Image 1 (cartoon, rainbow, N blue to C red):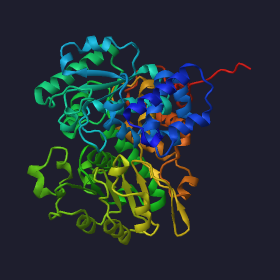
Image 2 (image 1 turned 120 degrees about the horizontal axis):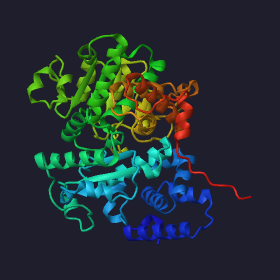
Image 3 (image 1 turned 135 degrees about the vertical axis):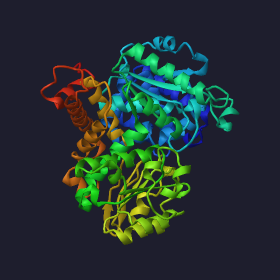
Image 4 (image 1 turned 30 degrees about the vertical axis):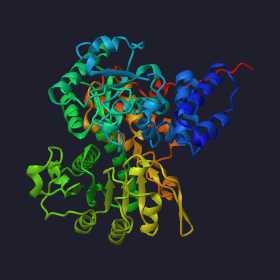
Length: 529
């Protein structure tokens, strides 16, 4: 059967063949493995093959990923992981993480103690309610914690044995999954309210009791109404980090700081317009406002006035305040109501347009042309994942702006040639931030996360962009140097943690960059000749 025509059962067989090859010690050439994993027309097959190697030959998997990170990052994580989560039940063979369901209520500590590894440093946990821009995928969201922790190891050097992927199974409201015979989770509608929060409280307490004060818990892809509540509740009592709110904000702020060398001025000189006012949009907006406030010594409320958000009902303005969710209220400024994005662009006249809406093609030709008519170098960030949900493509941004846009996206896009010039789009990928950020917390023994640590991570990433990168229109460095970048981010975050009195590892290492590099897991094959 042709590879292109393989169904899920054939895909299982393909994976088993690869398992046999690796477990028998077959002399597989690196180029052959890359071909299997990176075949561009078969992203899900490549994902499946990569998971096979991760399960059967962990050292090989990480060696391959570290040495070929630019090629394999889209396979191991976004955009391919989105499709993998959608079809997780069909390609499922064995658990890759820890599933904790409502049925374990009252016994979560016991469940955690059953995990074979005892020295856990990082937990990535999801409840599967808002997977990327794909919605409620329930238990099938496990692909997200597994993928994130693969990057913690490959990009940030955290030992694989110190990583724990967790999915909290409280059911799903996705009827298609509830009717799917291959769905691996609880076949019931989602638990909400007190029942939900009691389960999360038990989980967080059990984590702290079993692994200690310094274990990092990273929340992933929780729905807005729970994400903000959980972060607010536990940030003062646990070492918690929400990548959708804080990680996205940090990587985007880094890109904006770097872009200032291309567009000129300071952050305070620019006007920002967001399409999307959920976790990512409001998280980014708040961190931008915090950076402006600190750099200009102005009140945070004043800095927020430079930032406008558009949600599904239009521009967020003060006349809508009573009906707004609590996390949107700080962005309700005085202005007449505006329903459409294009009208908002014309009214606000932003210099920076940021998409976090998960609405594909929302940045229309008219919107991009309006941005280009107002700005010599419009800064356009289409951040929604996966690729199908991106607000516009790189080609659209460059073409509609006549080659003047500075563009970055959440998922990768190929280079674009326009009027004889090659444009290389940047990727505002959270993988730039969270692996190094987490390493910095671990190596310094940090016990709580302060917003200043996120600002430090952003500035450290922006500092890694070279003149050569700027010449190509890039506002992020290439992923080929990501472990070096992660070491610098880790060192900067650790330094800030020591400065704020949040670090518990004493004495402080003299050279934090070298210390970060020494802490990194590296898969090394010995030479026997």
